[in-house]
Image (cartoon, rainbow, N blue to C red; front, side, top):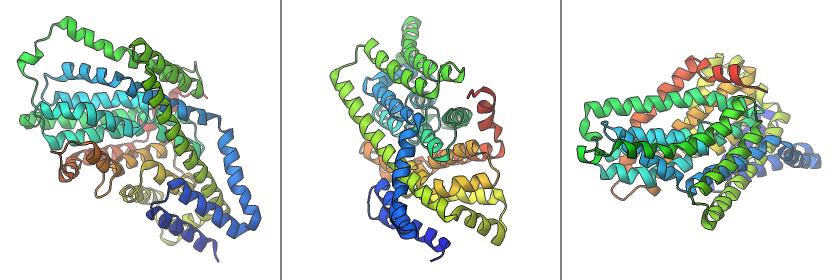
Length: 440
């Protein structure tokens, strides 16, 4: 059997297992080990052991549970609720102001959490009912929640970028910094779209009535204190890292301790909060670690097959495609896979193939990590089976139908595609910050 046919069978077998509903790490790990034994006999069994040892030796892996802990602590302690009240008052007088404030809230939550699921949960439970009660168009605000929550996998400390860094063997710090400007660009485009749309069609996002805006300035300024603790946490965690004062792992530890201290300062560090935070952190961290282990094993088999060079020869030699055409095909493949898989599964499936190929084509792997993440954000909201669509369906109130959810994401997907094109055309949007401020 040729190596090319073996590589194809590996992908077909893996996709077949995934379609049966098996766990992602189980399907990928099983295929990797089975083909390793098939190709190299009993010696192939060492691949799984070697992958496990690589995983245990990655010092940066310590950041994963610490960032997840930080995000759940801030969510469970209700600090996100306080933030929304602040944005509600300060942005309410503007047409579409509460929707704009929701995007701003999502940026802050992303900077404290790194997971899009957390942003979706907070937006759907806190912001969405309030927006609907204020007479906002249900289709538009449903899109706002989905689009805003997707920023969690791009704005640092993005857990997805941490996973990409581990699989692509790139510095996590550089990837974090690379995600800052693209994340802010996308958030800014969302806000611009909402502002223009509500200015043209005021009924979609009415301003707060004058009587509700009649609040003394002293009370408005007091509400700003809700942003002090999150800002301090973000500065201690990310600011000190950018300045070279702390390492990546130290920054994640500072973030976890600061989040716990913030909950204690607000008087919300209860047993229930601690129990839920630790339990969720353990569950999510274990899931990610098993997936990374399976990805490493799968990648080792692929490297041994030499599949990357064979595919490069096929695209460039036989089809005569340029590096940019190949890159665009890769992004399109993410959009297709995103209809069926979440971002972690997509990364694990294609990283062994795409990351070495991107390097051979001469593209920067840090920049490509940002492109991958943006494309995942788009795929998250692409019908018919986008991951975010069904999360929203599960969390939305009964008056929002599946048809409303599908319609809501159309303009926001267009905005995200525009952001992707801009970052592809101007790589320095992603690369300028890590090139100038990253300290090894």
